[in-house]
Amino acid sequence: MANPLYDTLFGQHTGKSTPFLHLPDGETLTHDVFLRMAARFAHAITALGLESGDRLAAQIEKSPEALAVYAACAQTGVIFLPLNTGYTAAELDYFIGNSGAKLVLATDRTAAALAPVAAAHGAVLNTLNPDGTGSFADRARHQDEVFATASRSADDLAAFLYTSGTTGRSKGAMLTQENLLSNAQTLARYWRFTAQDVLLHALPIFHTHGLFVATNITLIAGGSMIFLPKFDLDQMIAHMPQATTMMGVPTFYTRLLDDPRFTAALTAHMRLFVSGSAPLLTETHMRFEERTGHRILERYGMTETNMNTSNPYDGERRAGTVGFPLPGVELKITDPTTGKEVPQGEIGQIEVRGPNVFKGYWQMPEKTAEELRPDGFFITGDLARIDDQGYVSIVGRNKDLIISGGYNIYPKEIELVLDAQPGVLESAVIGVPHPDFGESPIGLLVPAPGATPSVDAIMASLGDTLARFKLPKKLIVVDAFPRNAMGKLQKNILRDQYADIFAPAKN
Ligand code: MCA
Ligand code: AMP
Image 1 (cartoon, rainbow, N blue to C red):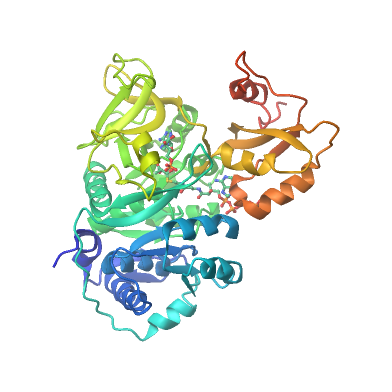
Image 2: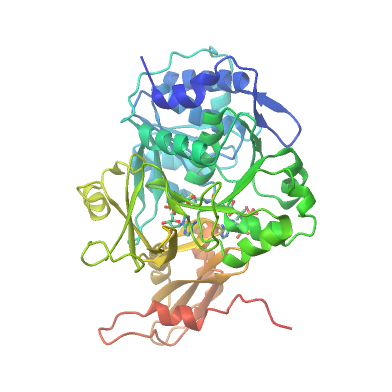
């Protein structure tokens, strides 16, 4: 009986009293304590009728318990579907229905809103709160602390992560055990993680970055994490002295740099800072080096592919680039219209192939075929060039996507809601530079003839259906949109026009 994901990440630590999670209140959970909790959760999951291959959807706050649900899914062979805690019930309705989740974990705060959603899809709803209480915790409390790990193969599905799309419909990216494991093993080696590492972990654990990159690498190496519920400047600065490494989105770095307590002395002992999920400005890279003497290591990945490229550990970490393809990952730059490789140095779309690349989108064979070629190359939609030394630089996106503070926002999803508002003829959502989030959405509205749409009412209505992080930071009513000769809306002109809307005022 084998289960590569569970055995490699978790099983290897069975019975070890080595530290795994350091909590902000000073408590430390050992691997053993964590794994015994996960085993109790595994029993609770199977007692609720879930079997290998079933889906468990979790919209719960970051906590050791939330991470133990991930371990319990690996141990039972249940597919783990973590969900952004910001999603509204309307958004969750789609994920739960589409995934066919049998069990939904919520918190006491969200259970009332989620109960009808779970019921509509025939799923069981249990609660698991950040303080470890809840109906799921009650069910697990007296379970056995040993669970017979379900047999799974490397090719079996381990997780679904939903990613939105340019059509406004989210797609469930199916990730296998092999996808997760191969990438974590490669990264742990590439970034030299060891059992001595203590990772300062402030990322959410419902996305690839915080869950698979940060957590899986730490587990493989046998290290530990300072497990903060979220990014909080005071906590980051207070805990930095106990850490050896940190991973973050660029907003983490700009916020740290804006605080005078973040000094060379505070970081002198640190081994590694990693950035990803969104472009790290060269200026941030430079400021960071000037302030601390450390060069941030930038890497590039996607939900569908895990990590694809990384700057080197020993060699030059070059600002404005995402480094080289990782060992085992093939990367090529192709012409978006012909699919043929472009000459070295020219811009094209990134395509990747390797054990890291997902199986496809859940129950969406046509969408899968649009992005995953029969030869295994995945079309990322990112535009890049490779320089003569092999460094990959991402120069843009061939997809209408906004990345705000590391969260992806697809304009189409917001436009669909805006277009349905009273008094709105049509809408356009564009991403513009933002000093904190890197990029932020703004919504432009053309009124229906004779109508005067209420921006405040529209904003309130958006908040009922869309997660708050997706909300446009501004809604602006305009007379008409710029269009080309074919009548196509020219978002690039709008982006130029509103590029400075969040620029800090000059003195
Ligand atoms: C929170 N809010 C945001 C964002 N985060 N608005 C826009 N963009 C955001 N990123 C909103 C909330 O909805 C709330 O709105 C208000 O801001 C305050 O919320 P709070 O939680 O206090 O915000 P915060 O703590 O300041 O959060 C900012 C953050 C966080 C620390 C940058 O967003 C974060 O941890 N981002 C990391 C995302 C991440 O892990 N991405 C990886 C994806 P209101 O006041 O209206 O209620 S994986 C990936 O991309 C690939 C695979 C890769 O390469 O890694
Ligand atoms: P997601 O699929 O939600 O995980 O988002 C993946 C997208 O984030 C990629 O397709 C890129 O557009 C972007 N991304 C991730 N890392 C980087 C990076 N280091 N630089 C620029 N863009 C990045």
